[in-house]
Image: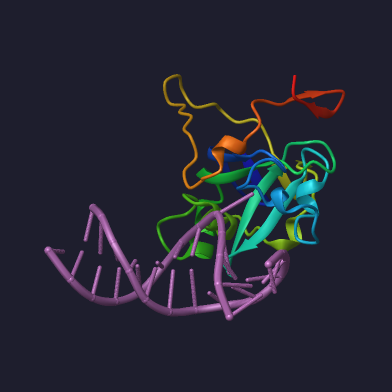
Length: 161
DNA sequence: CAATAGATCATCT
DNA sequence: GATGATCTATTGC
């Protein structure tokens, strides 16, 4: 679950961004001022502004300087639903990366924070039931042939085998 | 219900 | 000057 203050939700949809070799990943452009937090330590947050008006919340997953992360795409609201409704002003609370940041009041100030302590936390929650987990290929990526086969973490570094 | 336009701005060319 | 890991309102069936 993702928790910020009095509001929280169970993470039910994510998207992986694999690092500098992933053309869809912000790290593909190299280390810039904007992607500084993306290249931070694993277990920290990377929050960026998209389309000039919505924030997107990521968990950094790779070693320092690598630049891989998981985007939180959707939550199932748990705590502080009333507060979320007030912030969102509609019935759709957390079913989208931009929406959930509004509902949990996450913005650019929350980049680069460790996620194992307040104010922003990712914690264990009741997992979804068997048969309710799906993995799908990403769409909109034209350079899939350039992707690496597979990477592993060894000694806190990414290796290809 | 599906498709589309518009909002709005940091970052990069 | 163009673009984008989005969302909302509006239009057209």
